[in-house]
Length: 172
Image (cartoon, rainbow, N blue to C red; front, side, top):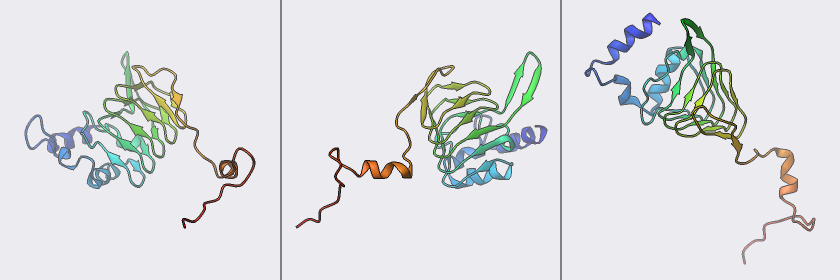
């Protein structure tokens, strides 16, 4: 923590309200920076394209899988309750989205393709189910927009309601 605080003061060389990391918002350079600090980040991840305050405070406890997008959101791995300070991991699944001012707190999990809407708080140890959208402070039960397709579902999708196979006809 002390090392992080020391580096944070060096990042603000442009003035008290500026952070050097703001120049790299949404770029691969920011992903590389957080990987260097210990975060486990997959491919095609977009971090903080509109900034964040704070950006990840404990990157070594954060896992973000492929294709996730974290907008102006907070990934907070610590909790201080009545003087008891605890640290736990955070997990953001594949193709998850955290919209502006959403907050994922310690030991919470976002399963693949889940979405946190604007101004959404996920409480410690909560789990956002696969494909679920959540909204609220704190977030109540979410809703699933669409069930993810599985390979086994394809034959049924390629059959008409009368049981005939659907085929593409070439244009004449």
